[in-house]
Image 1 (tube, one colour):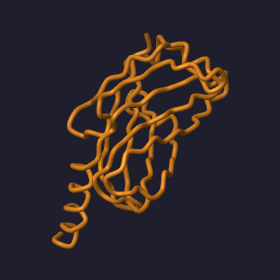
Image 2: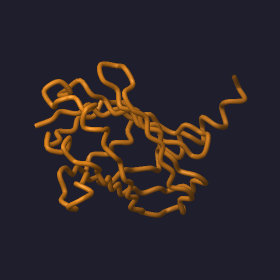
Image 3: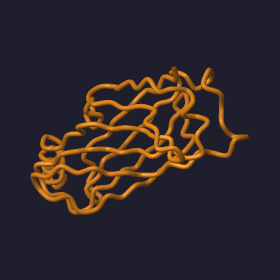
Image 4: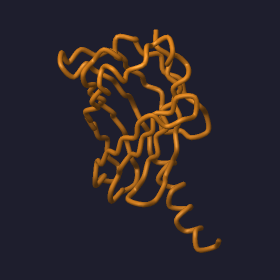
Length: 153
């Protein structure tokens, strides 16, 4: 177990210097912002909440823009996201940012394509039952696991 300590210490150091400043979700077709927030969604201690307009479920694709700051160098920032419905994984997405310069602020935009229309559940069923679990990694080192419960309004 002692061999994991340096990795755990590095993960803790990275997390202490890492901050999500803001995030927004846009209709990728029109560019219109549908939701934005400034809560640090990388914090692992709490289940965060997001109140997102239900019309986002009608978008063919959503653009997610995340602005974050890091005090520490990261060789390969990447995210693994799972969409959980009542605890069951419906979708999984992998995103890679790459190298993060120490003492930097960055904006990262990603495109998320919707499931086919016939596979989409209505907002009334999804509301409060969806948790987006995001694992933040520096290459293979797990830095944080964040959970956001989604409410469709």
